[in-house]
Each structure stands twice: as structure tokens, then as C-alpha cells.
Length: 381
Image (cartoon, rainbow, N blue to C red):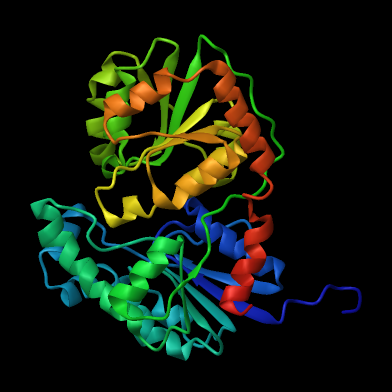
């Protein structure tokens, strides 16, 4: 019918093994592809996404925790079949073809290598995100997680994939060196630009915040230890996602009982910067326990800049250069709670205000305004 807008001629499929609306990186991919004229279909555990104009294909999952536990003790291939493959909407996807397919992380790889060739008529890009090997030391990790992840990662060398991506330069080097693939392109976990201004600093009430997943291995325990050693003018807010198993050890920490740290409800990915804006300093204190911590360049860093906060980090090599170059944060010498508390206690309100103002000046450069075109070029869109 004349006068009706034409439908996009290009189709893309974006897949992730998570609820798609909770993943800021995947949300960016969808927005960038839609802006480039693609109709984006979603394959995920929760296909609803406000920016995707295509179909949603839902990945199912075992109906009980008992089934998950039983499958965890099976050999990796049998475990994958019992937990993932049997719940894939393979029949629903049949007959669809895509000009571009973006596969996020490693959880779906055995199915992808088998099923995607029939769906692809263009590039198939594997976005590896972070590092999925060597991220634990416990017996449970070694027996039930490590061998399964290591098996999944054997599929990243498949010729199905025309390109690999990751989040940071050091991680790109690691994948090249450990797996013999061409060095992945780097697309940072960057946040959309927000029209915000720094909130004023109250010298008697300086509020620290840490947001994201409640992953103790990423240093929340050290932040809580530090909270007990901070001067009374400081307090810590945890705006974290997690189930009761991950949150319980945090709630049991003495800093919570003493009122030096509190929890607040997390918000949706599009609301994070606005929620952070009322605070003063974001703690991104990732001790070098695992490769993922060492090479971390997380979305929370970019969200904090959009929230116009100062950032407090340790010697994290992917972040430290940005902090020192732009002056929007503090690099702590040492990885203990005492080290972190001492560095914070030495700050003046004027220094914190200057950090927040520096974040304001950097916010445009540290936003999706520049990263979107880089992503589209990397994936051949």
C-alpha cells in the first residue's frame, strides 16, 4: 500500500543464554543493529525486548533444581543435552535465514555449531564477552563447572564463526594466545549517553555504591571489609542482582549489621545511570583472583561515568589508564579492605567533586555514541 513505510530488508538474529532485557551489552547490539536497518529476532531465555522489531524465540530450562543438580554430575556432552539442547526452539527456527547472526557467550555453542549453518546466509559473530575459564578454585567449581566450561570453549574455534568479539584488549590477547583464533575485535561494555549533571557532594554524607551482580569473587567482600574501617562520613550502598544463595553471605557481613553498608533494589539496565547519579563514588575493586578480574573492563565502569560518579579502582590494567588520563577517579595501591579504606579516608570533598566533574566532561566520549559504529564495522553490518 502506498504511503506505508517499507520493512527492513535485512534480518539479524541475536542470541544469548540469559533474559535478554537484563544484559546491557546485548541490548546495545540490538539497538545498533536496528538503527542500521536490521529487523532483529531474539533467541534467549526471555525474548521480550522493547527495541527489537523481529520475533522472539524462547529457550526453555529444566523445571526443577533437582534436575539441574543431577545433570551437573553428567559428562559435559550429556549435561548439555539434558540442560540446554533439549530446550532449544530448533523446530520454531527452522526455515528462517539471517543476513547476520550474533552469538553471545559460550553456553549455547555446541547447539550453535550444529544448527546455525542452516540459518545463516551471512556472517556469524561470536561475542565471547569475558573470560570463561579459570574463574574459581573450589572443589565444586573444579568438578562441576570448570570441566563443563572448558568443554564448551572447545567450540569457539569452529569455522562456523566468521568473527570473534570480546570486551577488553587483554582478553582479546588471551583468547588469541590460548585458543589460536584470530585476535577478537574489542567492543567495550559501554553505556548510552545520559543527560545528567553531577550531584553535589555532602561532606558529612559521602555515599559509595557498587552495582551489578552479587559476585563475591569480584571483591564485594573486600568492599564490605573496608566499610567497617571508613570514617563516619562514608556509607556504602549495594545495588546488586542475585539469588538468595549469592546474597546471603553479603547480608551476613558485619558491615551490614553495623549499618555501614545497606542494600537497595536494583533497577533496569536503562535506569542504572539515573539511579547512580545521587551517589558520589562507584567502587569497582576487582582483586586479581581470576583472569576475568585482572582484565575487567565492566559495564558498571561506563555506567558510573554516565551517572557522573567518581570511580575507585585497584590496579586493574584495562581501567587504570582511563582513570589516570581523565582524572575521574582514584587508583588504590593494594587489594585489602584496609588499603581501600585508607585511600578513601584520605579523600577530601573537593577531590571527590573534581572527580565527578571530570566524569561529566568524559561522559560523551565514554558512551555508545562512538562504540555503535565500531560494532557495526566489526560485524560487517
